[in-house]
Image (cartoon, rainbow, N blue to C red; front, side, top):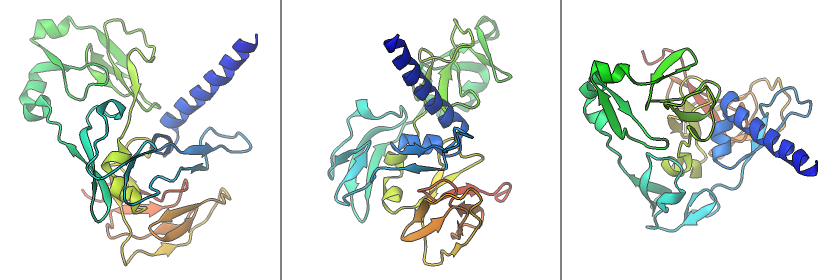
Length: 278
């Protein structure tokens, strides 16, 4: 009975964590960085008002990934990098610390005509396609997966709604999203934006804030803070360079198509304005 009770607690915590990553703005971003959610006292939502993050960059003489420091020229072991499209990454200490990684060139990116004539197939956690099925008859014989109103062919990948997972359509598809066909999406934020995290810049998102950031915005000499309304009464603050913002405050940046504000501390976060760039 005791073991069953412990299982329920662990299962429930993992379920909430999984739901949070898929359903709450910025949760996937923060959880990838090892931050801890501050859940609402009234349990009105699984979405946190703020997160508590570890010191992501305690020493400018090192690069950091998942809590481990790397000295200048030191490479991250490939087996600890959680993003399959991120390879051969090494620390580089210049004006600011950063990671330099090798470029990944997938054949599908170089041969777009192939995508029109064939079904490209993948393996779980592969960055590039690992095979292809060509010809009308062969494609017609592939099993399919119906997910969120869309049809995927066997071997294709998909990202289910309200999750932060990448899944593989398989011949045995039964509608269950378990670890045999799905894995958590890792954005590689610490690796690709090491220098921006060090400078306390703000992640930029396109659409909602449940996926991976597409860029970071950093403060400039013209950045100014405009006070806003903290309707949730959150006491925690956001940092942007050497500036401090309360929840609801906005900060100006040089890109007029991007709106940056403090919504879920401690990072200021930015969103592309809809239709601004045509």
